[in-house]
Structures are given as C-alpha cells and as structure tokens.
Image 1 (cartoon, rainbow over the protein chains, first blue to last red):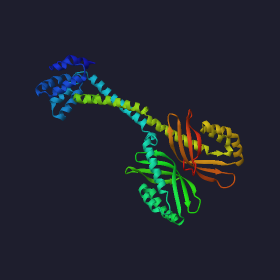
Image 2: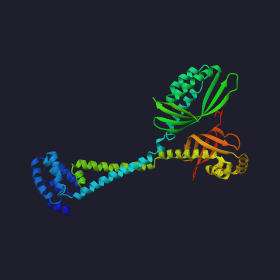
Image 3: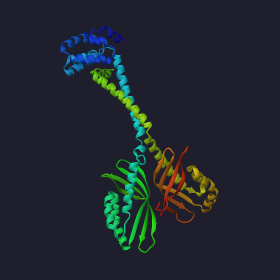
Length: 253
Length: 176
C-alpha cells in the first residue's frame, strides 16, 4: 500500500488541525470542508502542492478532479477536497463506501423480506383481524338485506325508498327490475315477506369493499294462510360509500 | 472505485448523512423484518385463511360419497374430522356402508361460498359457514340437486384444521 505510506509522510499541510486529528476519514473531511470556505489564497497554495503529490498515487484522481473543476468553475474548492483524497488513506473511504452500500443493501433486503411476510393475500384481508370493521360491515349489510327483502302490502313504497339508500350499482338495478313484480304480488296476494339474517360471515374485507356470505330466513305470510319459511343464501359485495356500507351486488347461492 | 471516491468527495455532511441513512436503513429493515415475523395480526390472518380452506375442503369431502368407492370415501370423511364427529363416523361406519350399498347413490358437492365466522387462534377453534350445491345421483331417475347451507366447527390438530361438528344451518329457527 504505497499510497498509505506516502500519504502520512507527505502530509505536511500547514493546517495544524489536520495534523491533530488524522485518525478518521470524517474528521479530516470536516477540516477540509472548513478549509474550502477559507480565503482563497491559502487553499490555492495548497492546491499546487497537492496536485503535484496526487499525481503519484493515482493518475485517475486528477483528471476526475479536473472534471469537477471545469464544471464548477471554482478550482480552489474542488482542489481542496478532490486533490486531498488520494493522499490520505483512500482505502478507508473505499471501506466506508462499501460499508455504507452494504448497510443500505441489508436494510433494503430486510425491509423487503419483512414486507413480503406482512403483505400476503391473507393480511390484506381484514375479515376478523379487524373485529370492529368486520362487525360493522356485517351489521350494516345484514340490516340492509333484511330491510330490502321485507315488505307488506302497504309498505312497498317505504321498502323501495330504503332500497335506494342501502343498495347501489348492479344490486339496485336488479332490485328495481324485480320490484314492480314484488309490489303487484304484495298488493294482489296480500303478501307479507319478513327477512331475517340467520348467519353472516365476511369472506373478504378490504379498505373500501367487502364480500360476505349471508344466510337468510324468509317468512312468507299470505292473509288467511299459514306462513312458510324459505332459506336463502346470498353472496354479497358491499362498498364503503360516504362512510357507510352499501350493497352493490347480490348473488343467490 | 471511482464511484466510491465520488461519494467520498462531497463535503462531510453528505458522507455522514449517507452513513446515518445507511445505518438507519439497516436498522429499520431489520426491525421491520423482525416485526413482520412476530406480527400477530399476520399470523391470525393466515390462521383464518387456513381454517377457511380446510373447512371448505372438509365440508366438500363430507358431502361427497361414491357407493362404488365407499371405503375410500369414508376414509376421507374420517380424515377430515376430529373429536366427537370423528368418533360418530367411526362408530356408525358399518351401518352407513350397508345403507349406501343398498341405495347405490353417488353424491358430489360444489362449494359456492364460505366464510369464517369466529376464530380463536390460541385455542385452535374456528367456526365456518359454507354454502354449497349437492348433487345426489341414484341408479334411477334424475340427479337431485339441492342448495345447502352448513355450519361447521373446526378444531386445529397436528394435521391441520379438522371438522369437529357439522350441521345444516336450521331454517325457520330465527329466534336463535
């Protein structure tokens, strides 16, 4: 390591501070950066000395420094930093650089690994992991379904209004298409339908949308006849709109 | 080499900042990785998905039986269950074999949808609800297709989640 040896010996810089703390790369640099702010004359003299010396250790060094000088148009400053580096233990800088890169790479790798563990399809689904949100979507969707599928001969208009609030998109279209028939039937047959949610589970819960499976019991009552109960299983897609869950798709199972 | 030198050349502040950032990145990455590995929410979410997958498969198994491959089918039933349900199947196997051999039916099931309704990760218990379509084909006549809704209890065993109870979700019992 010729360079190392040469550096220590030839370091006869007039700056006393540099002599005092030659141990670390960084402390040296701080001096240098301070130096560069000093009046031009001392650094100019240093430049001439340093440029002579720096030609010894590495021919690559100077051209590089020159390039910077040319770009900056401030030869003094660039020389103060660039020219000095080859003199003093460049391998320390290399080591520091390599360590820095290694640390960055390690951090990035670990972070990515962590994210991979965390961001699985399982974790992006908040069903049950977020109990509050799960209960809320279950409650709101269950309430919406029991309301829109419950009506009496005299309450079809009210049900229709409710549907416009709690249903949207495809679900509302389908519902509207069927509802004419429902109104007629309810009036003609004096039919009352009461729907109750028996079981509801969240299959998938994202930030703004959810998929649920809902088991319903539907009780049909016709005036003068015994009530009949039917089972219904629905797959429901709900979206969070304006702070409330709105049913956008219903599939009978 | 040239690259390292250029990073070393700008003033100390840049070098220090870079070093600190690098150390910070390593520390943060390490913490992030450690935290993720010990993330209870992630483990719970995984348990939920495992329970659902196992539950759906088990419910499908329990609704699938071919009289021509009866022993194999009943073995699958027993493999899908644990606890009381498993014991019931073992105890009732002989009688059931006779029954199916006489009826010569083939049952197949298709899971339409399922959801986990409760999960106690520590105790290893879960509840699932499953909507399915069961097709029963007898030697004569059209296959009978019916939609079915079932509630199952799952228990975690050394071989994964298994059904410990299974039944139809009752209809017309809405008081409960």
